[in-house]
Length: 534
Ligand code: CFM
Ligand code: HCA
Image (cartoon, rainbow, N blue to C red):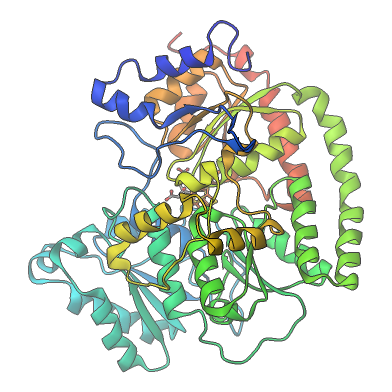
């Protein structure tokens, strides 16, 4: 009944894949599931199994990006004072230049800001035929001589992998030559893996291996944390930085919104890691825990309730009366404005229905913001998440602190298998018990309604069908979907870039989001115009 009156959820699911060839249909059927929660014999809840993080069938129009995008764009993109050089033809560097809305602070005496620049080796035919390592080394040298950065990172694109340039060797040589500059490379060729997700893993391994731990002097401050998986889209991280400061929490580093080399290098001094976007950064959280001992908790600063809960979780971890008081004071000061905004907006938004098809994290985290203004998410899915983002993590992985980014596909599969394994040994059970206090990472399914539709790697065709059949009040996606959705008469909110709006994090961000959504779902403009093709 929450989908459409006339069709059952099962019928809608059938309709989405009806036109596919049988092999594709069989595959898609495992990636489109109705959220049916069942109790097993022991009384514990079981969730449906979803097929995720598998290759998109050729011919399907997917929302996904490539491994280079995940490494260079997502994880390393928001860093301020690393010179990020794309080793490849100019298009890869050009089209990843300032396309994600991660904001940064302007340059200071201590920290340069290279965000406005696009660095590329601009490979030509000659480099493809005779090799591009010489050109890469010259580019590193040129960048160093012009800017004297603390670090230079090199990103391999598809042709680099195909012709076999050794980017790591080139960087090792340049690091020796340049002495006071950290130079390292990522084998993040676009074709590796099945989506941008492989790029996150490669980037995490590289940051951990080349930067984390380099600062041997303990930084000052009380209640030291890192914020992992926050990329400062639309200024979100600025809101959170201010929030932590007001609460007396020392933020050592953010991975990687508005971040600096210095922040990465001191991250191992944190007492607690707070993970926002689990999908993109969980590898760093696990590696820090394993090597340096600091535990991690899942936090969410999207949504007012979630913000209050996450702040309290941090205070609970440190268990200090002063900190608890400051956190409570902060919540008390900020919450009335949130409640006021909700009371004003809710009568206009209550009962409206949303669909969220975004990335590997926001399709879940934004559902709570919608629910705060009475809106229900009737269908959702990630572009490139793994099973744990849907079903939750079952055990702690016994990970190797392994930075060999060349075996990334194998590593990722191995790790995923470990995460969904049912706890078997005493050590598994023990580690889960310890985790209970932190509320182990739970995925999207546990929070979604009965029989809500969950679709991994939704295709353009399926999205269009869903909209036609269900007529949601709002569809959340990215720039590639936006105008196709709007042509179908449904407003589309971009949850990647926030449609040039935001910030949406924390209490102030929640208020901003309620008001933007209210404006969109209650707009009368569609009734006033007729499309030229009608
Ligand atoms: Fe994490 Fe992200 Fe997301 Fe992501 Fe992305 Fe992004 Fe996203 Mo676009 S890191 S998974 S790879 S929250 S760039 S800031 S908006 S798809 S949902
Ligand atoms: C990426 C970046 C992206 C794309 C957004 C979009 C982002 O996947 O490489 O499709 O609108 O957030 O900028 O996810």
